Image 1: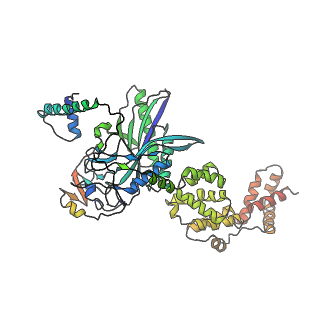
Image 2: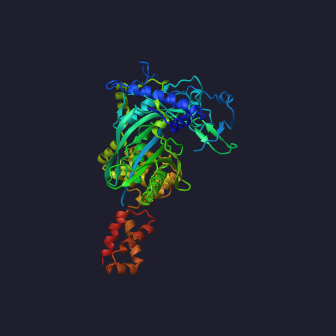
Image 3: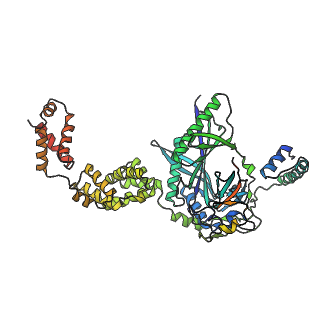
Length: 95
Length: 478
């Protein structure tokens, strides 16, 4: 399976990675190679095998529903670029 | 051409846990911005999520209540997208293996019942809030809500009108509150709804292209937005166009839906199992315990109200839609020991009307169930008439707690002394000779006039049944 240029551009956009025109052929090849490897694996009959969601043979630990965190806003916001009225300020993104 | 509407709903119910789904930060509503956003919620490097067991318990309760399968094993996945109120760059959700699969809910539509399929319900974390105003061209981010547990409940595309969608949503709303897994507060966003809406020519098997409507934070908006969207799609199709698959935002002020963005395909989110979280295993004995914990559910309660109290399906439905109302009714009825229908009428009538007018929940009612019962007893034993009771009820609403005191103080005791009533009847007949002549010459309708006059003369306190009886007798005499 081989990706085309627009697909690579779309993937780059979804991942918010900026690619230059020169980068695109290399990424197209690398990503296509990965897909080819997956395709090769797809030929193996895996019916009857439970899909593995996690490599460890263990199950989730849960915690009781207790509030254990205290307010550390000042601490966290001391490393933020910009804050106002307790809010983190970021470039405007409106869809 | 005749069109058929197809609707599926995705409801996000905020689970009423004390702490977040993957961190120990508080979920309390209304705290100052970012004071309840800890390192995990902020997505700082090196933090790890640990699942809140109460969220699992609540999801299991829901699953059992809608007769769904609660999966013995479910998996958390990352849903990847970039938005400033999602600090990690992904939302922890469930994708291929959700905790709840395949349930149903029955809705009542004009006497006919309809079953709506529930495809799935999965656990996920809520995002933060973006505030887009007043920050010199920047957006302000409040992450207090980030990490609040949500149960996303996805229906089958089984609804065929906005009315059915509302009925389903109300039923769901009632259910999550009965289960005490969500406070159902729509204004605070605890119970939110997205609607997938499409139309197709009647009789066609395939679905039309759907639009997803967002921002539907009241029952009224859901109905309006769906109806608008259906009209919009039919207009497009009838003028030869095509509906595009997209997300549309409902604007309540302008009462219109507008395009928000082209809808992502599921694979644009590049879901994959979250390596930070191990598969969630739900044991059989946990499920059995959860099953035992389930309260009497709305449908069961409604059924019981119709048999035990001989109420109509409608009355039973109104009283049981909200667990607090049902509890209030039963408490008042038990204390009053009167006809259930009398109690039902007061709870559904005057009490509900005043609560609505004052924008109060029944749990905040100035008239307690015990006090209402005190008044119902006086109606039942004929101390006061239904009409006078309204006056007593209003006095109790204004702060007089005890019905007997109100009756005593305002002298509202019903006149049941038949000689007194007879005297009033005689006076009324004597002072209205014209009406009397008309009545006797066949104008039966004037009977009501005489009743009214006697009631007026007694200041509403005469026993209406006795007044009727005496008037009938006296007017017939000649």
